[in-house]
Length: 247
Image (spheres, one colour):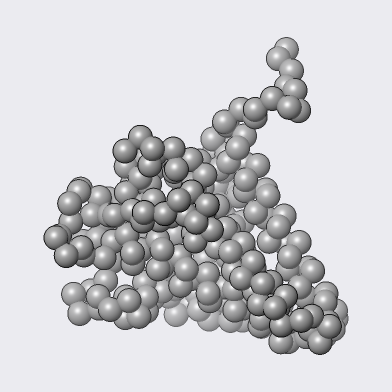
């Protein structure tokens, strides 16, 4: 039987699972910390830093679901992979996992053209109009109603039984969700798939941002390396910098 040293590199098949667990743990840990701290006792700079951190980690939930849709979170067990993807997209915004997967596959099949649920209508190329259409494509009226009902019950329960401030819930849960949705749209849809001045130059109709690895990870988990993702969709988010080196 092969043994693993704690100092040896981990097999690639476990890296997606470990990164997903790390994001889940950090997301939950920062949420508990933020909601259990008296707002009046926190300096403004720490409130801002916590909101930014929570936004980044909330985006991480979507990245887990996205990579699960491509089968790269738990490569050795499809049920675990789908289960973690379902959990991530539920925590993100109570979105149905299978519907999300279907729409994302359509995006890869017909990027930046008719049939792509992420692309804008002819009269909605402005980023704000495009963002509105982008959100509308993933949130039906029924899903919005369910989201509002469930989150209202959760928030009232936390306020009544755990005496958590409503402002804390808004600052550290609702606001990061809203900011995360725009972060994903801006770095993962608008910048990569907007029409370049010279027109689209590749079959993916995608461009990549010229960012170093650190800033690429910080802005949106390497979603800015978007041509690389479309060319190598089997790669998890943390391996996209390698694909950029191959280009």
